[in-house]
Image (tube, rainbow, N blue to C red):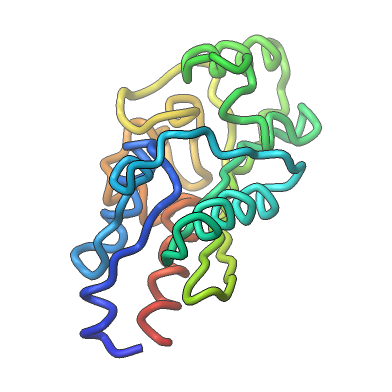
Length: 199
């Protein structure tokens, strides 16, 4: 794939999460134009029926590709906490219930970890890309720990309580560029970009 083709590429990111779109568009720069589900007038819920991040990401990408036959990708992200046996994992977005907010999820995690010394955790993202009908997968992960209270107002999801190893601040205290250099989604999207550039 030539760089000129890459720079004119449009890819559908199978999400309407504006925070995810912003993070990955930041990683892609101006090389690729990302379209959201809203941009292609898709307003349904995409099913996530599996027990692994890879299978859920693949299911979401296939769901859009099968209907629109357009190049697209989807991600699934999970926070895995060692002392909670890997929870919330694939249920990270709805850990406190189907209609829960980010704040609800954080409160549940902090309550379950109240008094727990082992706060080791890992954020993991898997991206499933369907390009010209073929499937590719990219993974990124970052190790860290769960804080005892919220810190910072940036980011989204569990960012205010996740402190990556080697840093003295949470993801929510980092700027987008700084976070993308080390975050699970930033690392996975970098692999996606490198793959597209070197095809």
